[in-house]
Structure formats: C-alpha cells, structure tokens
Image (tube, rainbow, N blue to C red; front, side):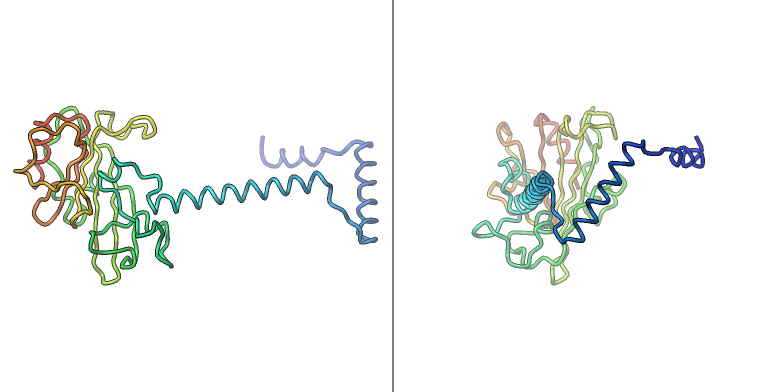
Length: 251
C-alpha cells in the first residue's frame, strides 16, 4: 500500500459516538480541573511513575556498577589476571579522583606507571590485515599456527600517557571454528597471543624462549620476553610442541 493510501485510510478512522461522549466529558473535566487549580494525578499513575523511576535508578546503578567494577577489576578472574588483562587497580580499590572509569578499564601500561599518568586510552576490534600492520607489534605475530587453527578476531589496546609515551597491547585469537563465523557467546577461542611493547605487571614468571619449562600442565598462560617486546600466551589445549611451534615463529 502506498503512503498516500495509508494516510487516507488513517484519516477515515473516526471514534464512535460513545467514544465521542467519553472524550467530551474528559475535556470538560480537564478544563474544570485546570480552572479550579485542583488538577490531580491518578494514584495509580503516581505508583507507575514511582516504579518507573525506581527501575530507571536500578538500571543506572547496575550500569555504573559494571563500568566501575570492570575498571576496578571486581569481576576479574584469576585467569584474566594471569592473562595480562589491563591493570586498573589502585591502592585501596578506588580510582584516583578525576580518572574516567571507562578509560581506566582499557588502559594498559607497565608496573612503574599509574592511572594518574594516563592521558587517554582506547580499545578497538581490528581485522587480520590491521593486526599484522599494527604499530611494529604486528610484525611480531606468529607466522606458524598449528592445524586446524586459524585467525578468529583481534583487538588493540592503545594508551597515551601525559608525557606522550604510547603503550600497546595487541591481542589475536585463534580458533578451529569457521573464520569470521564464530558465536562469541558460546564458542571460546582455542588460544590467543598478545604482544605488548612494555613489561607486563605480573607476579608470574616471565620466561624467555629458552627457559620455558618442559612441563606446562596447570600453567595455562605464559609470559615470554622477546627482546624489546613481551608475549602473553594463553595456549588452551595446545601440546608442548605446538606451543613451541607458535613461540618460535614469533620474531
């Protein structure tokens, strides 16, 4: 149906006589109420308004809790911490005054810097081509991936400090799923590699290629120093030989 016909059909709709009487009575009552200055809000309407206000406040509280909780790592698991997730915790579990919690939640920097040094921080999803072309770090991504794994998705954390220093964390996920057709809610990537142009803040051992232990069961995540950059490696169910295959192809 054309727009003109829809409009014409709408214009032919008229209220019934009974509806006319009800509307007319309502108009008279409204005018009388305004004239007397005694307009009243229906008690049920007030209740609905209160409920809607309370619900809105609850949603806002949950949103703020999620944002601040992420920034303060309230929901951070031990695995996330081991994986080198961006550090935003400060002494006492609170953010410094004036620090944006969203920015704090994606800021990456070495242990000798703090959130007070951060000027800006961003996180964005990038393509495979963009990952390999990212600020020097992309040149160091592994060139040998065990079959049948392949590129799944990638993200780039970029933090600029007030003195102009830039820190990057490039994370690339590899999976056995169909490329570009993964259900991220139900299919966890099989392993990921992240490259950092700074020394990560971690209590775990930072290995070199030659010091990686032969027995890796129970570790789940490795930090490896590679010259002037660092590798974080969540190797999933890869065998030791496959782990070394990936790490040895990082240059």
